[in-house]
Image (cartoon, rainbow, N blue to C red):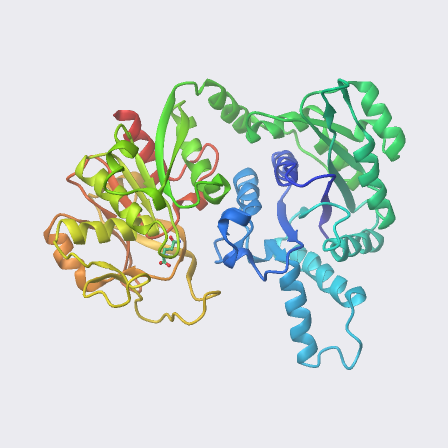
Length: 530
Ligand code: GLN
């Protein structure tokens, strides 16, 4: 039977509950325990696959093809395990499954209610995770803030789990804002007290409070929070803002959060080995020189939309002690007229994934600019597709070349739906998750991956159209990665340039601290060389 740590949030959202939970995961994992993480989100979408990235940040894709919340990316990057579809559950999914059961007569004529039926569904998810993960500790984060109407069924289910399993097996960690009032020059504990009261109303006494503040605070304040929230003073942990999220495990180690958890949950810890984290943090600190990457995307208003891409670039930068600066270029506004002024001086151009027509012509111009001026280029998913369209239009002179996603009537459908897929339904018809790419020997791809395969995650509907392979190859494009089973193009490269490579998959989902994905490492090295 696994032990459970439930992470709730108080006062405001956006405090980094995910980072805190992941950091605790890091400490426990590096003390010899097997960790699994999951997230419950109170929204009603069945999954985040169809939510606009501007609203909700990127869709993070798991090995098994789950389209999940971006917090799962943090979990994977921190605790370095591959999670699954089951690690992310929205209220929508819970209701959907309960209503499906209702339609199929599974409730035997009972009135279906939030309590007990929805809470039971939630509990089943938690217990199922125990079986599937075989973990020693499961860390579950509840999205949103305590007091939200939507999150109540989740909190009620967690309360019941604590009742069923007892305090030795279930711990509540409440991450809440401790605001600092500049006018009076003091911290205010009242919001934390109120949010703990909300929890108590739901029958939950938190065991640990993580006070998120702008800066460090003193013991007196901890005593006060302890007294007013009925929490042992050593369980009041301070977690001030940090200039890098990767420093947080070291911060909470200082306050022994892992030991507090181990004591309550009766877990045996080995010596905590944080050498890798210390190395990462010292690399971060030594990364002073700046390398600039131009990212040509369409969601540049919210960088969370490209979170994993950014983290992947940073990890690659840290390896060579370089700090990555992101130069966001709005693809929607890129035209032949302003192309030069927007991109001249670019040392590396990255075109990330995307869906739909918006910004596509701008991205095509960016790929052309990179190819013609021999600027290192990394294309991801749509970024590969547009590089192919650009090549077809400008090198092969197929002027109307396009993807059928945008122009279904083009005479030159360079990117098209390939065999065995349909276009009917926007949720659920993508090629999703982990596939094996075979790498052609002697290519840049095989050099970067240092081998003959790449196992990477996908999320797309369209593919390179094999009818055009020959003419591309005759003109210098190399198809260096193929999904052999279905003969689909996975990687293209253009060896005439110093570094021009693009993948149909999303390499950003397998980058880890101290282990950047090879494509990002190659790209950052190429920029550095310039
Ligand atoms: N829109 C493209 C497709 O569906 C690319 C998707 C992506 O970049 N993730 O194939």
